[in-house]
Image (cartoon, rainbow, N blue to C red; front, side):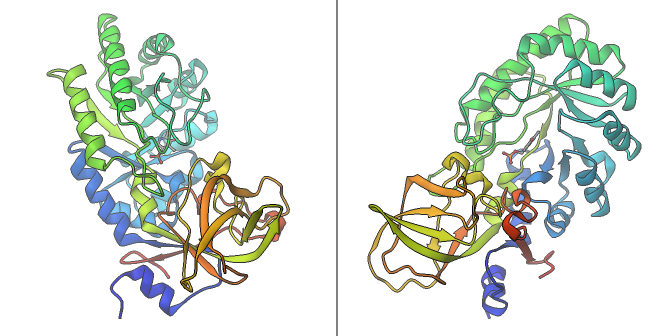
Length: 380
Ligand SMILES: *Cc1c(COP(=O)(O)O)cnc(C)c1O
């Protein structure tokens, strides 16, 4: 009998590929690590990273709250036993009726970055805490948000005052971009927030809450900072920029709580030689789980399941659909065994985040990526 629940599942069930298997014990362990690294901070898991009910169950049991993007994620978290007070509606883009739905269900924590949305919150979520999200001039992450979210710091003060005038309880939020390997990004965010806290105080509005977002990176082929390294930089930036009066902290990690808990298995559909290059077509691609391979942003590890021990050589990796964009890696160098052939299986470790949740519902008749959850909260 094998102790690792993922290995045991694979040995006993071996379902058809492609699929994702998630160890909920690892999710619970990560939750404990995040709580220990950021003592006193409110942790709100970004549900979009992996909304599988057993994952949510493990996090509820670990005392983690949830960052929801809309009514469906919100209802799911409540159904899994989360308390409304532990939910934050962190999506700045929301319909007034969805704000009203959240408020009616007991949610009192929101994020906003535009005057129109602040007004909707004042009307449909009276008295709630609203963090104003600022855009930062910081280092790009692997999957940056661009200019879609966040107001300029100069506009943030206006939104803070606007929120206060509408009876809301304003705070400041930022998000450094997902898979952010540069710890200095948080330092920039905290410095920006501190300036806004001071400016708001000068206008008679006391800000108390700072939302540091998510963005903590997880390892694939490249090394990333440890959770402790992120925490140390954040703690020292808080000491520098908020001497004496540390704000109440909120964190919205997604990836770091679930990525390492997941393992994806795929199968080689076809190997073809085109010009100088060897193309390997897999039964997983951009549309059924590897959306984050877009622009080759995240370079997953691909490990043969039963290697025959021969030499390896370069490959282009592509997905199974009839879409020209369904190519995974043609610039990022990958080596796989030269004798790789149809039916061989590969494993992608560290794929518990942003894989199944990004899969399309049936492009080319391919079903969304199946998730099997194992471990204490598992259902497989
Ligand atoms: C996606 C998202 C997160 C989670 O980001 P990670 O990089 O997965 O930690 C947190 N907050 C908001 C508002 C998000 O949109």
